[in-house]
Image 1 (cartoon, rainbow, N blue to C red):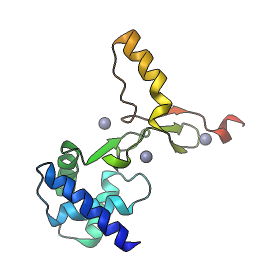
Image 2: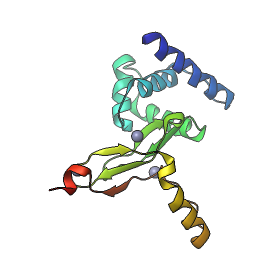
Image 3: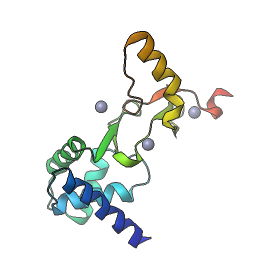
Length: 145
Ligand SMILES: [Zn+2]
Ligand SMILES: [Zn+2]
Ligand SMILES: [Zn+2]
């Protein structure tokens, strides 16, 4: 499992290098923290994870790295609700729907937004970006109450 994870880190660092980005130990630590996190980490949570391994890396440095990685197409952020943005690696990014009663987050396939995307494009000349903000509503549990 550890071997798999380190392979994936190197994979992503290769893409970062190919996109013209430098590999620093702080950048490596951030990518590692993103891969190790199986949920939806905020910048603050990622900073904590990096600082647990490298206490000398300042929080503002970590925020700047996130911006850099986003500009280079390695990382994407998304807004699940009122809280801070959360981060995904671009290759695993996906749209979300969020229950506005209990806060449950459901990851959905991009296909779920296809017909809406077509309608918005045809009727409004609007190009939908379904991954940037979550769509809110009620989950299965809450709709029954
Ligand atoms: Zn945003
Ligand atoms: Zn709910
Ligand atoms: Zn997600």
